[in-house]
Image 1 (cartoon, rainbow, N blue to C red):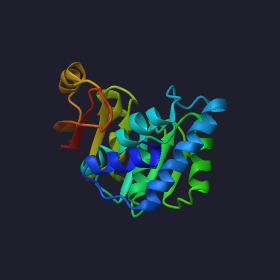
Image 2 (cartoon, rainbow, N blue to C red):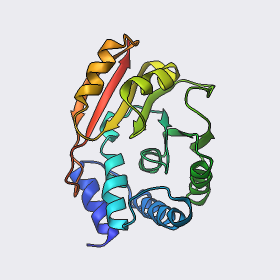
Image 3 (cartoon, rainbow, N blue to C red):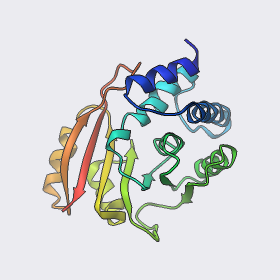
Length: 210
């Protein structure tokens, strides 16, 4: 099965509808990621098929839980999950925030080459960045523990918004620690995610402002 078939099959398995143009752009993004990775060390995953499952489909698995139109990807790194979300739903406005200059140079290049005017790239630390708006969804993937995520980015969440942390195995210890910290967010639910073609535990922790 080639990459295009794997992507189409994976999207179908996730129960999502993403048009052919967006799927083609996702494969272009993978090509850029593979190319830039050689010099910029953006991801430890080198194989394009693994990039597709571990990065693209993994990012798309959270889509049913994401609220738009304004979404912030904290610690975006190589643009995950922000770039796949922006390609899947061009009506959403994605802000990709990362403190690493090399990574934000790559993200700006992706936004230019894939013609994504709805994507804003910010090079700054989460705790010091001042945003002109609040966001309906703030996402993070392998960024930090739940407490640090809420402390760093919680002030950027709209009152009716949510924070979504992507995790591997069920983060029992982090959830217990979060309860002890008395932060102004409650865990709405922890969702077990099934990522097609990926044999690994995946969870999404959904938090909402009190």
